Length: 476
Image (cartoon, rainbow, N blue to C red; front, top):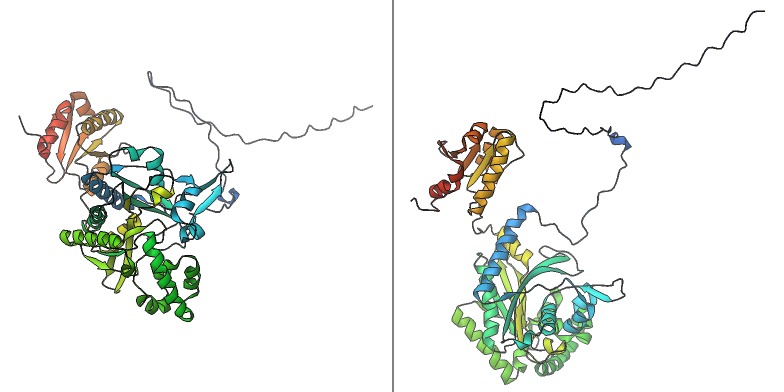
């Protein structure tokens, strides 16, 4: 009987394996580098199409190309503050919501419509600050600054938050600087704050006029509001719906109406200056006399009111004229707030402030193409060729900085030509070039980028030699 035939064995499946590349033998003394496994990237089709996250409405990135403007405005404001003897204060962005409810007034637009109010995880009601004056007053009281010699002069810089319709120069997160003087009732304080604000704009070349008015003291406003309400009720059918609502809740805000149909009524409304007490009138006249003496142009705007309850006596806005469109733009505002400190738990204390909007000032500078102060620019470019030269170049760069010489570099670049082209594009006057020969000899090539003239100098003496070339140090 024949033996049964054996079934053929199933064919083995072959799996493609990556072929390892032959590596060149490592030279003696060379450092060992562990090779990482390469993972094949998935095809584009395999990556899910994820939606790109965008900025929230009313928020804005401040990009590197704009930082030059922000730096210039910050330094200008800092210099003015220091010239007038102000100290810097920084308050938190997040505050107890009651600070602004009590300080700004419950029937103001900021409190009713614009504040970012929410409960945190401890169930405390907190607010992203919509302005900084109330925060400064809270700090003044909490840290006992009222015990210091008065007045206390403070300045600040930072972001504020209001949930309103975004517009040019005013986002939902916007930046303000501010000058605050607490503890002095003299009208010269009002004039000083206006003078500082005027200098901030005019020293950049932005032509401005101060619109100014007096809101008097509470007893002055009580008499005035009665006349104002009576006048507007007589014209009730001619006013907008918002003015009718304001007349019931906060009558003086009708003077802030921008509706075209309400302008003739507003123009003929009673003027608060006619209802000021002798004390309030004398204070206001002295402020104007100081402005006259300083030569600061101003316009008596009898319809000017500020939207916050804490203002008393002097109020003002900084206004610039648009010659092309014949329109006016309000850049910032300020005034006296003699009642706020008492409202927030302190003793009756007079105070005055202003809060320039940073974005609006920068827009004016760009629109008018105004020159900014010269930037701090590098005086020398440190170029290198090779790894050992790069190490020496980094040492030289550090020494230059320690000597107060601003330098530039592209240490990640290996091409000497690309580095020198970068130096030329940035109009840097000198370059230090280090190659292998210079490393061995302890020297560096100093190149005049305009003329192309080169000289070899001692590595350790290079910063001092460059200083003499730049006129920063006298030759011995």
